[in-house]
Length: 430
Length: 98
Image 1 (cartoon, rainbow over the protein chains, first blue to last red):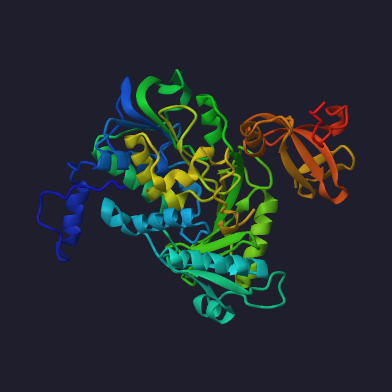
Image 2: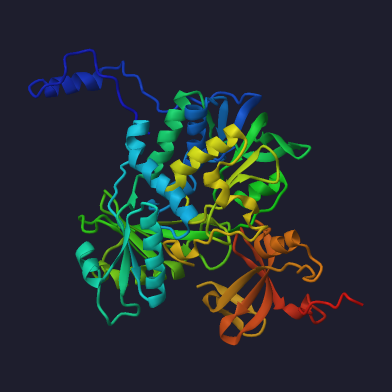
């Protein structure tokens, strides 16, 4: 969070005056800190909307409720801190090259909202549209890529099939050798792919929502959901009970546990996903590169670090511990793509809990409990949808009905076997 | 390396095993309504705590049951499925015409 000083009440700093001006500025005691967020006060006894989860999705929903629907008596609760969950743990991939038309439409609007984000909110999220290259190592992948490219183009998303020569031109440092376990046969080149500073997305929504009166209460854990005649009426927290008109759950990694408090089950299984970054290197990798067969995706941040992520762990777990096996596999696969990284050191590694759904699509909209709205099942694909899910979740709450854009992702699609299968289009299939 | 104590093969690297989720009771396919069946197919308890799960030692294709804590990742107990399933499970639909 930026803490900028007010300018001192003297002449502006010039080159000549620099040492004196700097000294005066340093010694001047009247600086006031500008806060992005107001200090949290007491919880009010009731709100129109309580949003559980102070990550990107929850805060985006709060922002859109206040900005576009005039609903400002909103409180966002988080048991930890602002953007401290999967908002901080994802690998910040933004793309829309999915396979079902329903998903492509939804994520395409997500990319568009990211493109305008910094201007719309007046907050720099360091959005960088540098393209994403997905690699095919089998004929089956090539066939899927062709389908994805055509569906994407039909809906106005920039995706195209590329051959080995084009891949060499897009990423000259990629290992195109034939004598590797999985030689590269072709690729899906997605010009709309990009990345952004993930924390800044949550900070921006929090700051702008707070300006409109939304309250963010961190370190406030929800311990129960109050219900009356099949309707949500409030939440119990570690700081007391709150009555409310609507509840939104946006707690990636804990979706099933919170739904359990609300009295229903979800088609979700939770797995850790492990990722890591290397020490910073000079810029050499412009696009994001991913490979489903190698279970790895790589991008280089503005700081020069390589962000490397993989598929989810092989079995369910609620712990963000890391394992040597998964790190070894991630590193081995990354080295198959970029062998010259062999001497590079790993700087940090971590895990997040991914709420996986059977069809690798999210669950948004109505729940079995009236006035209790779901934004769940975001598995390994949630960050890119932060703005677009916030926009449509806000509409869902304000109009008390999920809009057409979210209907393909409703919870009861499972009861009718009307799934939106995106397993083949996730970055690292599991 | 994490070790899974296999009831048949003894302690082995957990990478030799596949997990097939919580042990749940299958509804009767012939009589279960669509909602019940959909719940059985798609939904999960997804518990945080000790869960009884199906595991398979892939190289020997041996299926067994493990009790595992899904918060701490501790494997508390493993045993042959025969300890739970005393009778043969019949998957063919029952004849309900009689």
